[in-house]
Length: 309
Length: 258
Image (tube, rainbow over all chains, first blue to last red; front, top):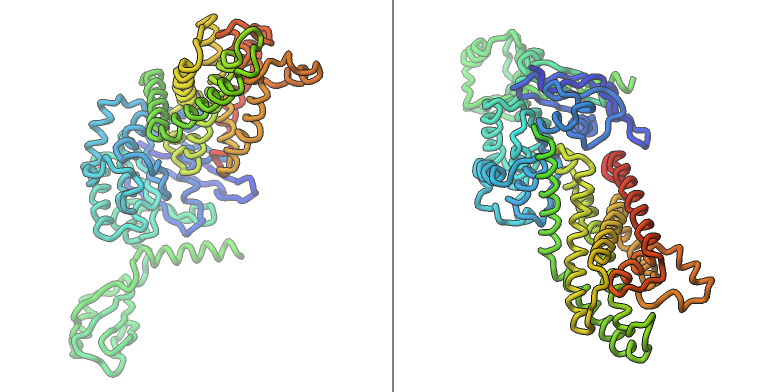
């Protein structure tokens, strides 16, 4: 089943700025979907239209087959949104924020209390339930917005940069939580600037730039487009000169650090065997760049080139 | 899915949130009108009023009590909605409502009932205070209650419209200061328009607050400068117009959506 279907979505603001130039996008139920793009590309505008926070200029949006124009209230019940900016009453206690949101969805108070307890506990906010939201740390505020978005148990959860400004430990615990609710059947759409996050969590991806979708495919297919990867090798002994490794482009960063460009069809075993034959011992190795990041820069770079030309 | 049940719970949630909001800050919302009105009763009612003598057959303090109660209702119904809805916009938690399946009329009625509740609470407090200064005899409970509630609804709606257009805190204080206060003071709270020269009597008839104050005074004292049916008709027409305008603002997303 299709969780989200967007057809020819356009948005022009009153000042004439064209934010969306005919977006087409489909997200299947149960998917974990990444919507990526540079700043100002139109990601948040797409999300705001889906969430009814911005009025679209034209086009069609449907959620689980319910048209956002003709079946607005049914469609809205199926969406949960974690926005980029904090948008709750800072003076309200944490639990009250969840209870109010549940109330707006028509959830009776008793059930709302149960749901609030469930999600506040899952997101490690239960101890803070009586605190005013303004006293929470940045990471806690982000988790509060996730709990609030889940309180009516939506089938489609949209997260607009949910881990922005959150430390790595909390970010990883949020990833774990999001994977769990996705496995339980919630469709998730995620925008993020941490491409490692998208690569690690999402199965399908759309890249948006200048208000247009420039790529829409599965994460695996996209990553398979990557022809070369650059590896950074830390060496046991320092080198004086750049070693010659036939078939590979090698550069010496400092005495103990080599950068080697490896083509997709080349074998890592072959590389290590050649290095070993030359008496070069490798202590550790890492990718120079996140793989998705490399592709993202290429795609957006190409898109910008075509737009400017 | 029973939509009416959803609407009822959403409405109750908005109203409860509004009541909790103004009760949480009762020192800013309930106490000041009580103190101000007490000062009015002491200064205008007792100290100056005793030298003024009778007005329309009533002692001056008896004459101004209905106007002072209604003035408190007007100001607080208006202030509650304008400040609450503006904060909702300013801090973006209006988005909590916009994303939810809550129809615009439920949002509007929730905020209006919140404003009416504060107006009623302040009105009751002011009425209790007035009992320390005068023997309040109610001519007609039904008319008094009707005008009280309708006036409160009308000014809660006006506060909502002000909040929709407001872009800064200045914008939510300009209307109460430069429009609402003069209209209230010149709306016959402290005097009967029969004291004015005929030209100013006619000018006063443009002021909608005059109709509310007089209808309320009729409910309490049984005297009015204005025909009751005309007064009630004007209040109802204003309520219908402001309701339609508010709903139109919400459906167009004015001041709320891009």
